[in-house]
Length: 47
Image (tube, rainbow, N blue to C red; front, side, top):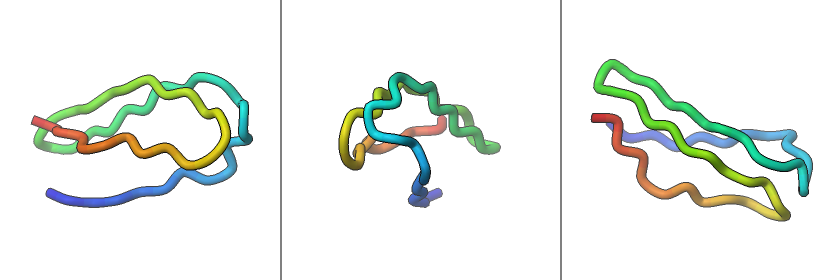
């Protein structure tokens, strides 16, 4: 499975978030901190 996604409207310097992605093959969760620009979260393995 492959996909890309974008999350809009998170203000710069808005702090910490937890992102959870789920699919039939598994779940991936990570903490992230919004500072200035875009974040690259890398490869998310769901299984």
